Length: 509
Ligand SMILES: Cc1ncc(COP(=O)(O)O)c(C=O)c1O
Image (cartoon, rainbow, N blue to C red; front, side, top):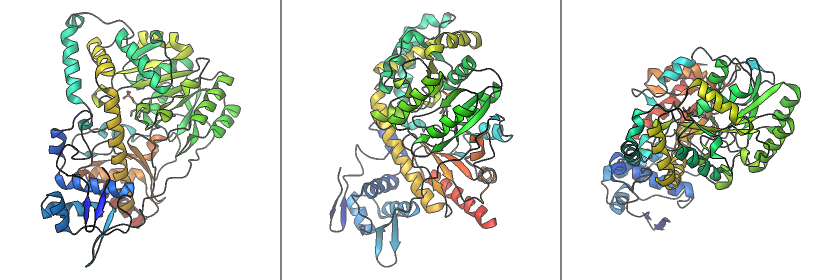
C-alpha cells in the first residue's frame, strides 16, 4: 500500500488487520504471528519499510507521537516505543524541540572488498574452537545468531504436521517394512520436477534421497576424490564443507569471493592451471556466508570452464529457492551438457528447519557411483517422511510459501544491516546479500572475532567467528550473523550488544 503524507500524517493503512506485522507464517495471514509481534514493532517495521522504499523521504518530518498514536489507533506509549525502535535502528532521529525526522543519509556500512586467500592448497584442519561453536549454534538458552536456520514461525508448520500425519496414516504398512530404496519414487519425481525451477531437467531415476545436503556433498566428494586430493572451494566457505573435507583427508585451495558476484573465475582458472584440482565445491546461488548470487553469464562460463577440463562441480543448491528472481535461481547445472555438475540440496532452509535431515543429490555422470556409495554408507531412509515431503512439494503451497519467505528474509536482513550501521564500530563492513538470511560482517582489524565470540557467549549471545569459514588464518576480524529469525526487541538488543562488545575490543586495542 503506498504511503501518503497528508500534512502531519502518514497513511499506511491500518496497523491492526490482515497485513499486521512483517512476519507472517508462510501460509498464514495470521492470528498466531500477530499475537507474537508486539504492536509497536509492527508499526516500527511498517514505517521502516516506507523509509527504505523512499515513500518517506530522507529529512522528512514525522508526525508527533500523539498524532502517530491517533492515526494508527495505538496508545501513546506504543507510538513512543515504535519511534525509539526506529532511532535504535538508525532509521530516524529525534531533534531536540523539533520532533522526529527520517535520517538523511542512510548510514549503512559498506560491503566488504573481495577476499584474498592464499593460492596454495592447504590440508583441511578444523580449528580447535569449531566443535564448541558448533555445539552452541542452536542452543535454546542463548539469543542465537549462530546456526543458519530461519525462525520456526516463518514456516507452514501446521501444513507440515498435517502432511506427516496423513503420510503416517496412508502408508501405515511401511512402518513395518525395512526401507532399502534410494528414496520413494514420489519424492524423487517431486525433486526432479522442482529442479525445473533451477533450469535443470533431471532424470528422477538418478535422484538419490539422502540424510541432508551434508551427506549429498560427502557422497559426491567420495565419488570423485581420494584422500590427499585438492578441492577448490569458495573463500570464505560454509564450515560444514570443511568438516566433510577434513573427514575425507582432502586438501583445499581457496578461491577469492567477490561479495556481489561470487567466486572469481579468473582466480579459479589460474588455480586450475597451476594446481592438481580434482573437483570444485561451490554454492553459486545464495552462497554461505556471503549470500552471493553468481551472475548468469558467470554460471555459464563456470560450466564451460569445468566441462573443458573434465573437472566435476559439486553444486550446492540448498538455498537456491530463496533467490529473489527466476534468473538468479538458475543453476550452473542448467548449462552443463556433459554431466559434470553434481547437484546437491535439502529441505532444511526452505520447507522446515526440522527437515534438514532430508536431502537429495543428482550426480550427473557419477550417479551410479553416488547411488552405490549411498547404499554402502546409510541404506534407506524414512519412507513416511519422504512421502510427506513429496506431498508438500507437490500440493503443499510450496511456491507461495517461498515467496513469503523471500519477503520476510529480505526485510529481516534490511533491519539487521540498519542495526549494524547504527551500533557497530566505525569501519565495520557488512554484506548486502542477494538472497537468503545470513550476513558476513567485517569488523575493524583490531577486533579478534574469537575473543568477541567468547564475550558474546558471556552475554548469552551466539555468533559464528570468521576463522571457522576458512582453512587459512584469515577472517580473524569477521563474523557470520544469522538474520533468519524475525526481529524481536530481545534480538535487536542482543545485536546491538554484539556491536558494543566489538566497539569495546576496538577501544581496548
Ligand atoms: C550451503 C550449505 N550447504 C549445506 C548445509 C547443510 O545442509 P543439511 O543440513 O541439509 O545437511 C548448509 C547448512 O547450513 C549450508 O548452509
